[in-house]
Length: 558
Image 1 (tube, one colour):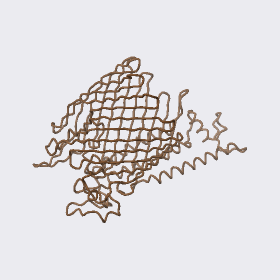
Image 2 (cartoon, one colour; image 1 turned 135 degrees about the horizontal axis):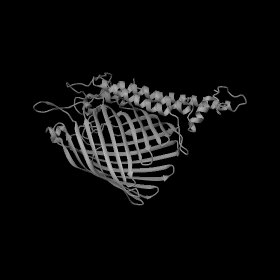
Image 3 (cartoon, helix red, strand yellow; image 1 turned 180 degrees about the vertical axis):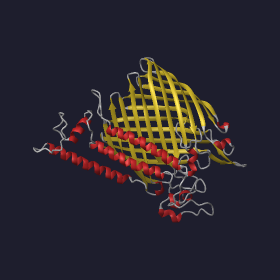
Image 4 (cartoon, one colour; image 1 turned 60 degrees about the vertical axis):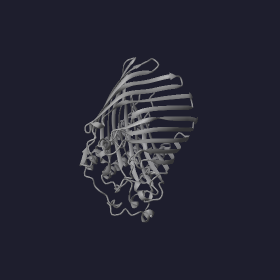
């Protein structure tokens, strides 16, 4: 039931080649002494042109056609919408049928599922304890029915957005750029030295049925970037579908997508904002699980914001957002969450564009599935629902001509519906200084004590403390280099197990170094290469790991 990225990509490219040949034939015929008579006379000045050619010219030049017919790029977009429809229907159907690893302990798994079939005979015996189901066994989860229906609703919204981009006339004001549709394909080859982020103190053969922690996999992606100006408004969309295939750990093969769309709205010169939607499906990371459990993670985000220059020196901003996270593995369903947030800010703006202001945010997190804990006395179901309030000061200041400072300081209070000993009250802040000594070099320094904005493990509040350095060098118009260094301590300060006295507080120290090389021989072709070294030490058993990741990416935009 999985869609194959290669097959869809090949079909899509073939359709574009056929359509391109057809357009070329029409253009050649139009230059011939005997024109092709598929002209539709409508009494206008375009009556001597072919109907399809007339519509294409009007779309390109931003004039609405009386009866629009899809042109070359429109058909390409329609093909992507069709592929997306098939993909989304199959993904939503498979979300509650995903094969999941059920290890009898956090770090034991069946080699026939996680390892290559060649290593299955060498897998250690798990003993008389509970055994994971065979790889070809699919378990249904009754709670996924509502998720499937919700996925259908999200699909309708995505189709409406894409259809609007396809059918809406590209009306533009004088001097405004016409609509842009940019299909693209890309291939990424990745070598990961520790796919499951296994501790150095664990023999991988007892965990994944393989003597090696490493694997190489490739990801094929295709999609479309769209931008459509409409008077003062602008609509943008990014639709990406991907397919990942592993050489050794075939159970990790997966298909995903990243669909995003925004309406950048504007009302006059003093009022503007954004209305947006995003939907992603990917394999959940293994670093936070301390287990090789396979879990398809779906995240949907909806947001709206607006900024109003009340006076030339006072700016008012308001925003609202919703995040929904859904997991497929039964062992991680307690991390399903819906988070609703609203915020407001008032800033004083100088003539130079510098600003200082006050901001506040209210957030509510709801977890549909309680988390289960076994205490010495009984088994308890904990609801991780919470309310969070934050208020503080913001600063956006150009210090000199080559340095810019962005800072924020907040007082945060989080209150849980259950186990009030988990409540958190404290100060958070973030400082980001950008230094641009030349037009080609940029250095960014970041210091933070902040609540992690997004976590796969939602039931715990993760407090980040650390710093980061990022450097960029625009070597030539075609070559860019960048590097980053980060050192962060992650403290799980509101874990329910800690509140129940079952465990102590988990603290992880993560260190990472990375480098990225980008080369664009022509604007439509890009090649990137990246190196990453990451280590983690932890005060929980088997929480440490080291990983080296190398990937090479090639992208072609039509």
